[in-house]
Image (cartoon, rainbow, N blue to C red; front, side):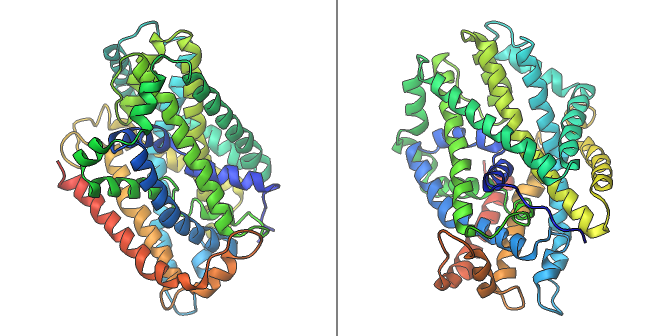
Amino acid sequence: MATREHFSTRLGFLLISAGCAIGLGNVWRFPFITGQYGGAIFVLIYLFFLVFFGVPLLTMEFSIGRASRRSLAQSFETLEKKGTCWHLNKYWMIAGNYVLMSFYSVVTGWMLLYCVKGFMGEFGVNTSAEASAAAFNGMLASPATMMVNMIAVTAVSFGICACGLRKGVERITKPMMILLFVLLIFMACRSFSLPGFKEGISYYLAPNLDNLAKNGLLEVISAAMAQAFFSLSIGVGAMQIFATYMNSDHTLLSESFSIMILNTLVALLAGMIIFPACFSYDVEPGQGPGLIFVTLVSVFSNMENGAFWGSLFFMFMLFAALSTLIAVFENIIAITMEYFTTSRRRAVMINFCVILVISLPCLFGFNALSGVHPLGGNSTFLDLEDFIISNNILPLGAFCYLGFICWRGGWGFDKFLDEANRGKGMKLPRWGLPYYRYVLPVVIIFLIGNCYYNVFFAG
């Protein structure tokens, strides 16, 4: 096998790994649930789980990647003891990458379309929320429109990956992530001048005991736990792959904390953009896609120089989505290259065709197949695919990684510590085995159970 590429700089590793973790959920979900579940109280609970739940799991995934220098295709075989079957878990974990991309590529296409519409001045002036909703629904009803944009973002992302790690992924993603942070900080600073800044920030971050009591402490804890887990993209090897390209100059706990800080910064700043704008123009904050494509489009159209600010916002959203798309595509390509011993460009061409095909159910689920409700109610194929990856494969993948490190017959906790603690920086203690072996699995089991309860029994 050819010599494996490495990142040219540590900053490249941190920004690209953070780009994988920084996704659309950070922007449209974290701000909403923060305001809904108690503001600063929720943020503190979220940070607790991020530090004591998310970071240890991220460190674990990084350690397997750096120690094996292989993707999911061969990492378990490289590290497992002879005669064990841990490597069989890789197949459903690999499948998770494809399930994620089957709908994420479609949603990234939405971001491209709205970014272009913003720069073309198509948000209008003083556009009502009803008109914004009609425009969004019109896009969903047009499979041709969505397909063109989905193909565009998929082709660009695979094209970047085709150029290799340094010449493609690092060269493009590093400046894109820097620009993402510049845009985010610039727009957050702009929020200070909005008339509803004080009310928006108060709703967003001020401690709200009434909301805490209204939702119940257990529900707030569950929401914070889920957000901490899903915000770091742990469980399908998407973070592992970048550890295979890194050096051993710094401990993995230090790198995990750096990525956590970048990830949290984006989430917090996104709320500083969204809520002051909503409160300035008397718009009730929504949730999910409605917040982005309906509420904020209406807000920008009513804002002075709104076309400019709306364009910047959707450019930021597009960069956040593309960074995840490129990162997961790189994982898929590396897996294909290792498993089938093929070239990078051939792996790109094959997977480009695969992604286009498996994205069709999600794309047609809003129009031609809109009468099909896989999970009942008004659910779509996007809801089904999100349920498969978020409520099943991601937490089960993390559980598998834990077992591989901590349980008899796996890689071994001592070997994990030796790898994780190589280099300068914070180190994991050897007395942490019971925490990894007993506490973290219980938390993951609770997370899975709570996800199923929310989908099938709550409300």
